[in-house]
Length: 556
Image 1 (cartoon, rainbow, N blue to C red):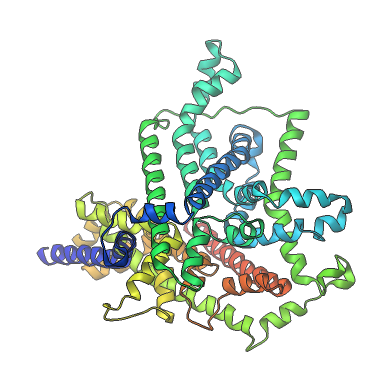
Image 2: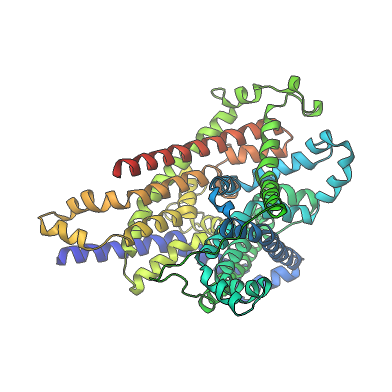
């Protein structure tokens, strides 16, 4: 027993050490580099850098973009959440499945799809020649907000829908009995109960917006709207390289995100109510008849067309066209771009192979490390376990480009005994750090549901630690490990900003290939790669879902 306690303690210490090196030190280096310019300590240096180089406007533009996208996502998500939670439309679960497609689609691909659809001579103008004025109106700040809102609103929708389902109908009925109108009940009963979930979703959308690189790099650059992430990328990737400005911007962006998360946690603590108890309750359902039902169906259909239909139609159509100038017609369709894309030894085939290899390596390492970290955290609330939990979640809280800058500072430092920068290992390490929280959270959720008496029973019947691990623990946490592996593989295979900054010279992945082809005007090849990449992701998810369904069927 003493030896097991010693090994458990050493495992916790090792997990804490790895997280400090992999996550804590890079973030500290960003702050240190930003307040220690020119070998002199100056804790106001980041503020001076932003104020003195006309970067304050970039910061304000990033914050304003985040606020507007939160508002846009709310306008899209709140009516949909009410329809799916409070009406019979909630029986159509396929709507939720389709609404996950925007989440699974890399934002830069969705942005490219909208550009192809709305640009001059684009698909919309080919169908409606009189829509030219719509193109000028779309390529503006409002269009950028619309694109990002359509990508991010599913996060907010799921949180609001689940919160509305938990609100029992007895609360609304009590308000109605006391003479409250529908509007008054919504304002005084529903909204306060939604505030905690809405605050969490709004902060998530805000942080993801100001941390997003793909849409600002494609659509934002076209309309001249620059944000913090695009400026950080410029100072790191374009000559003359200026890590001082990059770290100053990164430290300010990191501070904004941490402040937002603190505000969200404060709101959640203040407006959290216990809605689920031992007493059964039902959610109030409203009937949709006549024009009401038609309006709701029209709203859902329009939302699906805007968030899924238009971007995917544009991407698939562009990948099949022989000549973009010839327009949409059957005699202008070809599969030659896919043939060229997948031809053995081509640049595109190597880029696709690099993505698969890097994603496979990163997801496997992330699952091994994440499982160890989750088991080290366990069900304990000790200080060291709480620190491990906090560090393992930081990459999900911190903008990806900020985390990448910190990793570059650490692994390119002259005092490091091993310099991973510009190597294959650096790419794998970056992916592991960025997507580690998924595995930790999935495995931790599985582990906390396991009753400790199962392990005690295994020990009582003579099972050693390895037998208990192999026959009891691993089978029970395997679904969480599999979910973490899939999520890491899926997101790593489409990662853009990290790949742009840390890939070795002459090495490409599918994401950087798509970005480069779109920038160079080779749209058809880039969109063909986008279709193949997203298609492989969807097939993987369907395969795993089929395996899970079969496992549940056999278990029953």
